[in-house]
Structures are given as structure tokens and as C-alpha cells.
Amino acid sequence: MFTRSKFVRVLATFVLLAVASTAAFADTIKLKDGSIFKGKITSFMAGKFTITIGEGARAKQLTFFANEVESISFDQRNQADNVATTPKPAVYQPVNNPPKVVIADNPTPTVVTPKTNTVSNAKPIEWSVKVLADNTSNGWTNTGWVVKKGQRIRISGDGTVSLGGNRSTTPSGEDFEDANKLLKNVPTGALIAVIGDDNNEFIYIGAEREIVATRDGSLFLGINEGNLDDNRGSFNVKVAISPEY
Image: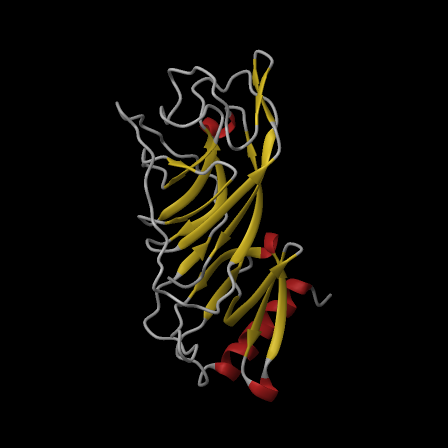
């Protein structure tokens, strides 16, 4: 039988040969079966990535489900004419390694300021994830994104989780006493983030925040509480990452 996997491999070879001379740099989708596609990622909707390969009358659009994808690299494009310049890839990579968190003596929120002098027409790539409130994976949910330093990331969350003891919170957090929470100066149970599995520079997110990545690494989300053992539920979180930076 001519399976989807075999079809993908044949089509990948054909398409890459056809467009090799038309683009010096391109977004790259690598599938779990080893197939690689280069083109321009134009959308992510209903769990599917769409990539446009080639230009003009030769342009073709291919669609892949997220669970077929091993990784995605986005090349930086020139803001004036959308022509690729020096490639600085941003990577989507589904991985499941929780951070090895080392709690600093005086952890404080990382203050980041979005760039204001960059104008871009590139649409952000959006992804939804459930952030568990309990101690699964050391209390951290891997978003599946490996971000690059300088990338703009908008994170928003909703829902309610139980913190035990008849306490509950939204992603904004509540004014509950907790001497062991990671960020002492922000509400207990609030949505927080960290970039990298060897990092303790925790970032307060709350209900919604846009940040700029201060380093390369996997993006993890969690809640700001010291004891997660009696927690229940999850936040519904949307992550939007700009492919240009």
C-alpha cells in the first residue's frame, strides 16, 4: 500500500528539488518520519501547520498535523521585502524534559521589555497547552517550544485550579501566604514561566503578558506555589511566538 509516510517522503524529495533554486533561506518543517520541507509557514490552525512551497504558479501548500512534526525552524526575514536574510531560527520542538529547578535565595521576577522599534507583518505562531497545577514533571509543563533570545512571546491563560485547603486561584494568583513559593513578591498560584531546564530566573505571567526571551531554551510554564502535592486542575494557556526577532 502507498502509505501517507511513503507519499510524504516522495513528495518531499520532489518539492525540495523543485524549489532549491528559488530560495536561499526558508522555514523548515521536519517530520517524525525524517522528511524535511522548506518553504514559508503561513498558518497554524486546528492543530495543523500549513507551509507554502515555491512561488507564483508553482506554489504548493502542504498541511501537517502537529503530532506528525518533530521540529520547525523559522528563518528571520527582511522587514522591507520579506526576503530572507541572515537566518536566526526559532524552533518548535516537542520535548518532555522538566526543568531541573534550583531555587535562588531571593528569586525575583525577570523584567523584560518588548521591542518597540521593530515593525513586522509576520503573524505569530500560536499554540494551546494545559498547565497542570499539581507536581507532575516537577510542577512544570513543557510548552513544546524552544525559543531563541530576543523572540517576543505572548502568553495568556484562563481557568481555575485548586491549591488545596479550600483555596483556588485563576492565573492572576491570590494573596495567600506561602513562604515557599518561587516568586515571593507575586501572588500565590499565579501562572509563571521559565526558559531552559537549568534556569531559576522565573517570570511572572499572570492572566496575560508579553515578554522577550532573554536566553535560548525550552519554554516551561507552572504555578507560583511551594507545595503542589494537594493541587488539582489546570490552566488553559495560549502561547503566541513571533517567528521574527
